[in-house]
Image 1 (cartoon, one colour):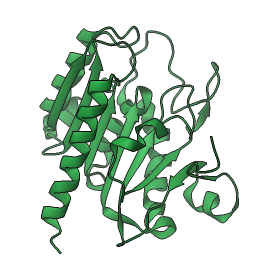
Image 2: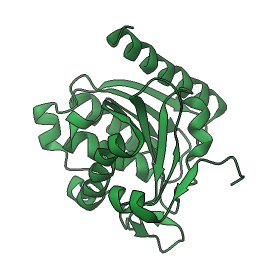
Image 3: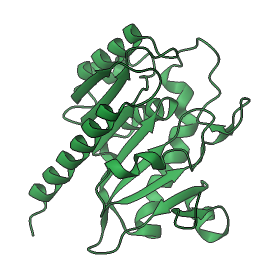
Image 4: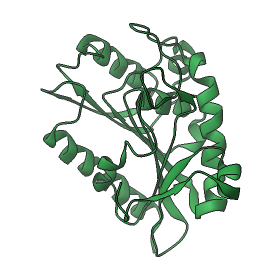
Amino acid sequence: MDKESPLLVNSGPTLARSGLVHRVDAPTGRRPFPTVVMLHGRSGDEDAMWIFRRALPDDWLVVSPRGIKRDPAGGYAWHPRQRDEWPPLPMFDEAVAALVHFIKSLPELYVADPAHVYLMGFSQGAATAYAIAMGHPELIQGVAGLVGFVPVNCDAAIETRVLRGLPIYAAVGKEDPFIPLTRARGCAETLEASGADLVYHEYDVGHRISAQGMRDLKAWWAQQAVELKVSKPG
């Protein structure tokens, strides 16, 4: 990444407080800052998600932590998924605990607004974001899930409608070789059954986001910013 890249935090007291290596793009202006935590997919790292920064409001705080485990294929992961495995919700517990700690550190470290923290995840990062939202809905104001999946065994989340009213944007690739379309559609049904306010789009691509998907994603984030301003006049 070039010299204007978001700040890398990989040592010192900020790392000790947050618990995770990360990059941060801290805005200037009125504080505290609405915040987006971006979660990379398998074999990614803290650099992988910044292509999506342009879809986010310019004046929001954006952070992207590194996964908690080294992945055998290189890079890092949130859990060691095996081939053709659809992991259950408890398999994300270690990652969720680390990320909840990380999220709770952000107001002190970067003047994040604890009442307005959002998640955006790609692939396994999207699954991790859904796991956080299901386990700690009080921490999260919205989730953008990009070519991801919902952990299985979410019966309790559905029964209690734990995501009631939570804005969720889900982008799916119709030709995704890793997450079959039938599986992606089933995940959307689970999110809706859990009470989410779901915006769901399918695109004629594989395991990636199309140009139209980026436009739709940017529009969804712009709507979140509008709704935030309405809720916080002045």
